[in-house]
Image 1 (cartoon, protein in one colour):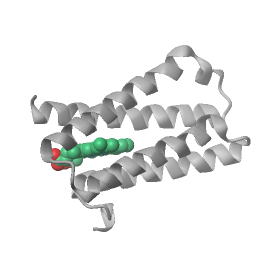
Image 2 (spheres, rainbow, N blue to C red; image 1 turned 30 degrees about the vertical axis):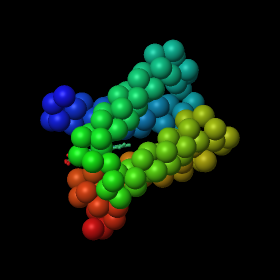
Image 3 (cartoon, rainbow, N blue to C red; image 1 turned 120 degrees about the vertical axis):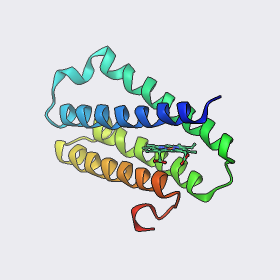
Length: 124
Ligand code: HEM
């Protein structure tokens, strides 16, 4: 399998993931009915699955025993967890907006981990 192709797919999926997340978070905070459309509910799962599967393939290809890879996996779980508060579990608009900002910050931290190959991310 071509490493650069998988990496390109992984990065494209990451870009689409954050764009879709921010869009849905805005719709959640503004209580826009588009949030409940079938395609809006399903598409993010497909994109996030591609993101994760490509990440795992890359990790296997470069040897998964690097600490920053474990950091990315843990933070991906945090991003998804906080993300579900932003989009559905948060009861008030304030809670959902706060969770959305935290999720975006976690995502930005993950990108720093990816680029610097270091768990300290942008602070490395
Ligand atoms: C929200 C989650 C994630 C985001 C935003 C993300 C983002 C990125 C980005 C931007 C790159 C390219 C870095 C560069 O410029 O060299 C990258 C590479 C990579 N990612 Fe992810 N990633 C995520 C999740 C994961 C997960 C869960 C894994 C492992 C299971 C993973 C494994 C990798 C690996 C192994 C590379 C290749 C590094 C390299 O060749 O330099 N990623 N990721």
